[in-house]
Length: 335
Image (cartoon, rainbow, N blue to C red; front, side, top):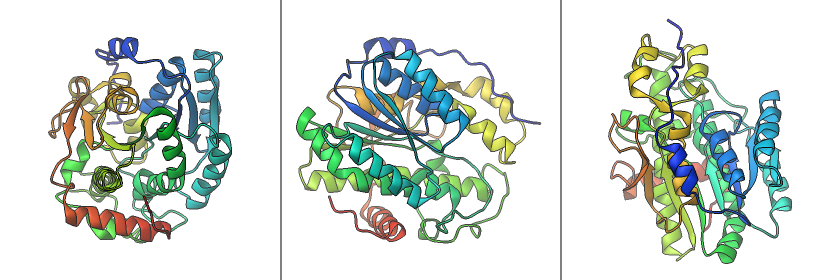
């Protein structure tokens, strides 16, 4: 049975949007804004006056998103920057453009939103698992390269933010394993779509655990330097986006998922509240995890702040994620 995205109304987003602060004078960079949570976040931020840099692979969908969001926020600067997260060279090219655009303003918040889910066991041009490079390693590189712009914005505004996007799938794996962060693309468990034990889903769970571990490591290092830049992470619950549809087209969704989604999922707008809360709310503290609960069944609800979890917020995992990620991008990441 093919996955069919059910129609789910937004419950919490309208009230949240009404209370969002004025974001004029702040620049936000967001990956993956052609649909889903990234597009919702980009449009909401633009409508509140924030300048938005949308980092997407070149496509007609990217062009359409640019048109839609610009029309929804007339007079606000919305800029599309080509960035393919399955290519480190593409990320570096995007950074060059961002540095030029944001030389004076800095970047107030980077939302590392883009992701793929339960894709086939394949390698990127750089040799890494497609999911791990898209969901974590390229975001690690992007964050590392843009650090001077966060520091600049923090001096202007009093703080700046790096927001990573995890998911409930982090709970599906016990610990982060080094092999998933190495050049083993195409040799990491095969293509079973079993959502508990299948290779596709184990690889996806590793990437979402990596997102959270990166946040814990970044928070620790930023705090040690008494930085004004904050590291945060969020999860969307079961947000009713195109992510599941794309996964199904690639053979990754289990039978019956559509039926479960009718009851367990929430709208893509409500699923955006985690990353939006972390990126725009005043008095946000570094090292917090925003989402509709922290358990495996926390699939919907208003986003709230929670502390990081010991599953990844521990010395061993922090050391692993930092060393392997630096090894992957071929550079140190100095705070």
